[in-house]
Each structure stands twice: as structure tokens, then as C-alpha cells.
Image (cartoon, rainbow over all chains, first blue to last red; front, side, top):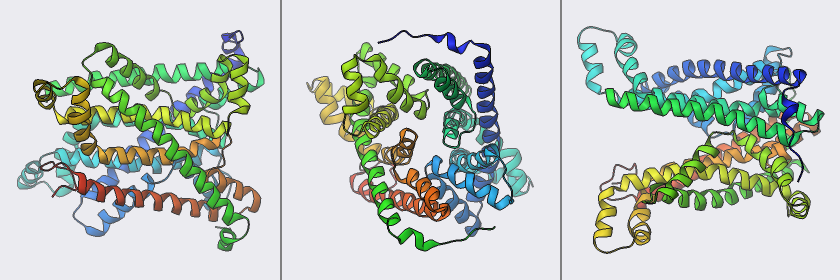
Length: 222
Length: 240
């Protein structure tokens, strides 16, 4: 056994490195959530559209990405994006592309389930009063679908937030990597990893409690 | 794109053998971790629906703790932090003398993490079987253990077969995280081949195809099993 010494965290140089790290984690997660949601909605709409080839492409995309480990996808784009662009783009861009394309597959499945939960009569009614298919989706079906699936989408957002820790494999300086740099430099592996775990736990636990509370409120209203 | 493709690399010595060996490790990690996740997850799922408040509390705490810390951080905790809290003798054993230290740590970490997810599936399965079944079992004189053994669990597993399949496939994919503590499984091997030959994309492609093939095979297999074991009258995909 040994003495735990958490003072290493509050040394100004270290705490500012950790702060930069957590900002990076939030930035990556935030952009990936927005991008994943947009692409995921698009994929879900393709999937339910009554055009066979489009829905097959969307289904193939979703099944393909869901069969792969995220780390492998990160590796793919880490090497592929610079090659396509023709110049080095930095870890952040390639990782962000990987996250958006990967998470969109998961979001798309949630959104599809949400759209399917809206009663068919709603679409028929919207069409009957003269809205186009796209208008019916935009103003009638999607708003109801998003309301019903918000808790699951938020839960997926928490999972994505945890997934961003995997940028470790390409060394992007997120929260975990920053902590690891300090851990190795100051020989405080135990304290730093415990600290990282605690921060992630507090953030994710609080968020998941919030989602639970929100879900209860929706259930009461519906 | 400026890249010299050389697909032959995948079938040349020693790279073909490397990939096959690495796939072997991926499968070993997945199956061992699944054994932990399934048995502990089932036990916790039973706890979570038990009539004893203390058991329910234990299971709830476990699930919240393991679900809210990223798996990668958990792997680091088991690998770097946990041994430091043991006595010197045990610490040395875990770090060095234990067979395959990194692999074993990865299996335990992934297994314990996934147990929290399996627990939630088992709980929802037991809930889906219904409170009346439990009461009926108790009414004809079964003990609580018997009710679980003969009524709730056999039905619950049949209901949750599809989500359990995806939990197994999640383990299969998450086994790639073992590379962060130095296990050369399938994903790590693609990086190694990339470093040795600069033919990374061929290796990535091969791994991509292998992961997809295994996933689709497992899914097709489980769909057949689901068809045979579906509860009559349920809405399960396979039920006729």
C-alpha cells in the first residue's frame, strides 16, 4: 500500500491541462452528437421512404457500421481522411468524421423506432389536408417522434460522451489523455485514473438521473 | 488518392498467420468475457427484481457504477490502479505471475462492465414475464428461488434472446479495447501490419470484413434459435 496524494490535480499547470482536456472531450462529443443526429435522421428517413433502393442503402449502411468496433473505424479514418484530402488534417478532424459516421448508424435506429411509434393515421391525416410527404414528415411526424424518443436519444448521447474516451488510441488530447500525460510525468497513475473515473461517473450519473426524471415527466404527460 | 494497393500482403507469410492468430485472441476474449458478463449479469438481474430491498440496492449500485464510467477508463483502473491496493504479494501476482496479465485484465474488465448491461436486459425480461406469473408460482407453494428457476428465468431468457445477442456482439466489438493495454487482438494486429508494411488499408479491410462476417453469422444463427425458442403467442420476430 502507499499514500494517495491527490494534490497533483490542483497544481496550476496540471489543472489547466485537465481543463483543456475536458473542454476537448465536450467539444468532440457535442459536435459528434449534432452531426450524428443530422445524418442519423437523414438515414432514418431514407430507410422508411417507400423507395426500395434508398431504404436498402440506408439499411446496409446502418448494419455495416453497427457490426464494427469503434476503434477500427477511428483507425480507418485516421489514415483515410488525410489521404483523401491530400494533406495532413490532424487527429481531431479525422476522429470527428469517424464519430459522426459511426454514431449516425446508432442514432438512425433510434429515430426509425421513434418514427414507427407515431401512428400511421397521423401521416395519412397530414397528407389528407394537403401537406406534401416532406411537409407531413417535417411538421407532423418528426416532432411527435422526437418527443417520444428524446430520453433514448439522450441516453445514447451519454454513451457517445463515454465513447469519446476512445480517441486515446490516436492520442488526441481529450480528458483521459491529458490525465495520462500528467500521470506519467508526475508518477501519479493511481490518483489520476481514479480522478478521471470519478469525474466521468459524476457527469454521466447526473446526466442519466436527469434523463430518468425527464422520462417520468413525459410519461405523465403522454 | 495516392496509395499502392497490394492485396497479396494479406496472404503472405507471416501476415496471414498473424491475422488468424489475432482473430483467435479476439474470440477468446469475447467468449471468456461473455461467460463473466452472462453469469454475473443474470445474478444481478435476479437481485434487481428480488423482493429483498438489500439485494435490489446492491444490484442498482453495481449497474449505476459500471454503466457510468467509460469502459476504457475501467480497463485502466483494473490494470494500473487495482493492483496497487493489494498486498505486495498479490500485487506482484496480478501484475506479473498471473497467466496472460493483460489479456486476463481485459477479460475481467469487459466482463464486469457488460454484466451491468446484461443485468438490465435480464431485469426487463423478468418484468416482461409478469408479476402474475410470480404470484401464481408462489401461490402453488414454490419458494422464491423455485419461482425464478422454473418460471421466471426460463421465460425471461426466451424473451430477451435478441437483446442478449446484441450484448454478446457488443462484447465482441469491445474486445478491441484490449489493445490499449497491449493485447494484440484483431484491431491491434491491423495497426501492427500497418507499421510493418505500410499496407494499413489492406489490413483494415480484412479486419472490417472479418468483424462484419462474424457479426452477421452470429445474428443469423441466433435468429434461427430465436425462432425455435420463441414463446408461443409472443410478438418475437421468430414466433409463428
